Length: 298
Length: 341
Image (cartoon, rainbow over all chains, first blue to last red; front, top):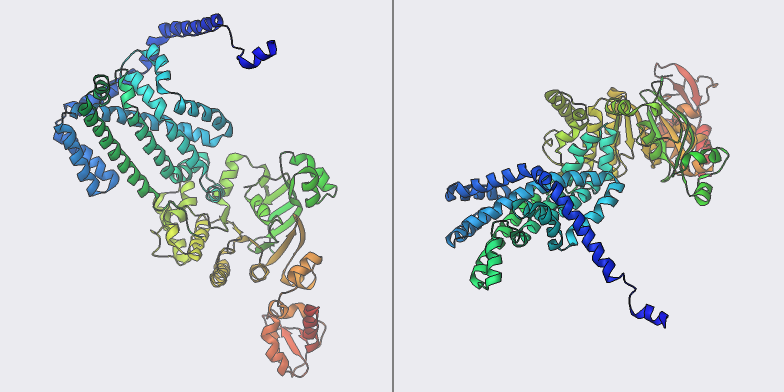
């Protein structure tokens, strides 16, 4: 009788214990955030200042100047006149339909987020490529970061830092940083062993090998990672808007809750336009770097 | 006799996590196959003793897996020995600390690789400059040096091209220039010409010999090709299963192979082309004034026509035209018969 019960109903912990467990973990975390929340928030102050400064810069500069600067970057990155003209029309469309300010907010958060992911992701990737133990430790963390539903880690972030730009930025970075780390690691590990041996044979030390051989040869792969990171960051814009990040996500959110189809579509299209521009520019830049790195022929 | 540049003594290399424990087993007579089957460790080098003369070309030869690439990597310590010493100019390389080892590699050895191993993201100039830039040499000085070597190997005009824009032979010239640019005493060439097609290969061999006339480097040249070994090597060391089975000049290897492995190796060699008159002449013979003379370092093949026209044989003279011996048709017939067996 008991045996049958064992097989039909999972022997789960009692409801009372489970409730206690959840309560004590939540309580402990609440205490932690009450105690250290401000201190941790202070750590992010410089990032916040920079983010606000950058956003204001984009907002307050005359729009033709901003468009000109953006188009300049597009051309420098892609060397394609068609893409530059396409981008011009995209920006004009965005401005004409009243989405200029939101778009600039999104561009600023994506820009800062990309800079931060590169700044953190590449060193972590280098660390991972140099040690199998580091790789074994970091890989599962990256898996969690990529697959954990973002709402779940938004809870502790909001508990700790409240609602606003910084928690939004953190959420975006957590979601978007894994590709840069993974592809930096992969790119460095993929560098031809014979070429590395040659660097060794000429007496290159670790840093010389890293900066003169490994990183330059891994750069196209790393750039593929940066490209993915930007795309994923853009995909997070709507979710980040739920915790108070300004930008194209907020009107989309408003459109969802109020069933404003046109408003949702227009802002969605603006995100798509940004994504396509970022993607094409970073891809063609990555391709240009690849030119001579494909390896010498036999 | 010239000075010994590199002295390798009792060198053992076993690949595997417990290499040190098994050196005694190897010393006790276990061979490569047994070590692998019983203990799952690979025997790379088994008690190598080799003296390499200054300014000479030492060829190291053997089939794949014989340990020749492992041996050459002990000279700049790209591979750590399990036991033994490698002395370069009397200094034990195996005892160098990390920074001294880097200095040693930066100044004393240049290496050329089988598959070129050029840096694909650098143009030819920067490839050739690589060793100099690692030493943090002044930029214009290192450029001058690099350009000099690019010219020496015949690649002027290609300095702004990238490796993947060059043919295999040209790429290996870049590899050679890159190694020579740091002006090393020792040039390590790991099957440097094996990946090239036959015509280019012969070309590169000639170019190397030509350069060596002025450079007088100590060259260690790895190859699995006997013709290449005989053409280039002042001395030839033959490895089998990690053991050094014979070290000698071309004549010694051809005329007195140390074991079956070596004789198998050399059995198809065209002896009259490779052997010099000096190695088969009769030094006790009397001079016959009516016979023509040949030089002692001439190949047998080259004096065959003179020999066939002559009645009773030839006088052999050295480079100062002093009489040193005689050679008869019988001497040559004997060599031809030997190579047929």
